[in-house]
Image (cartoon, rainbow, N blue to C red; front, side):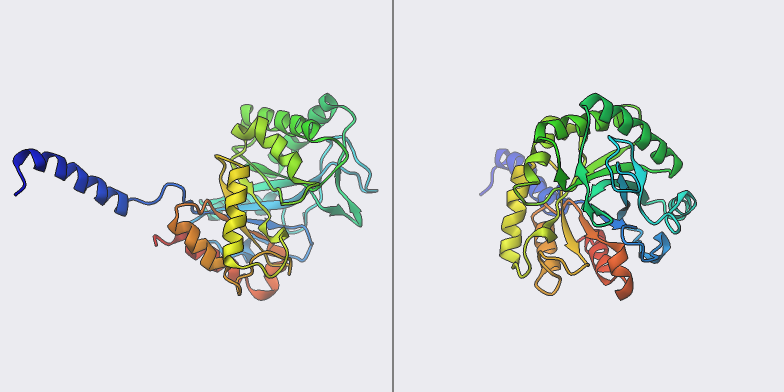
Length: 302
């Protein structure tokens, strides 16, 4: 028999159980992000399917502090994405038509022409000053909401990179030039130390970690992917680490091998912080099937 005193404890317990099983897991997100414009294949914002139930970020690729002869310019960034199709007018238009869309630009990238884009500076102060001026100008011209850091080659040490990028992010956020920032590391000894140094000192300024899981080798399995994910959320502790898919034939966990199964597993664990795809340029020829599937998973209540 349950006494009246026991009832007092039982009812709160039942309520807690109800809340646990009915409230959404707070670690999950409805954020979908897509890189666009790096390969000049004529893709437009309106080509890409946009689910009304997600938060959608287009990431223009790339702004680079190199001149047209592929020489570094010490933080003076120029636009290198497909401006014929992805310009101020089309940014303004897609945001007006879809209230859930924001647009960012990515800095750096792998190559310009046939040369690696290396993070190169003269001094920290001069690079930061030039970067603040040029990024502010581009962000205002193109009505941008955020930036992504995607340097993959470096001529400096990790601490110098961290200080330059950290100071840049601090200024842009304090002055409301951008509302969000992300980084795009991947697992390699020549890359991770730079982003981990940045994360160690300036993680409070970084909203998302676009981890390039497609940079792992081809043929990985769902259990391997889950292990890699746990490693990276440990590396970027406290951060929102997004899972990723490459539609350019690169590596990582493919849809055929269980990418979306892994996404559903992470969602069940409350760890699906979002999905991003590289890239719209590559997806266009197949009609964006993985963009649709990714957004359906994110928007679903299940």
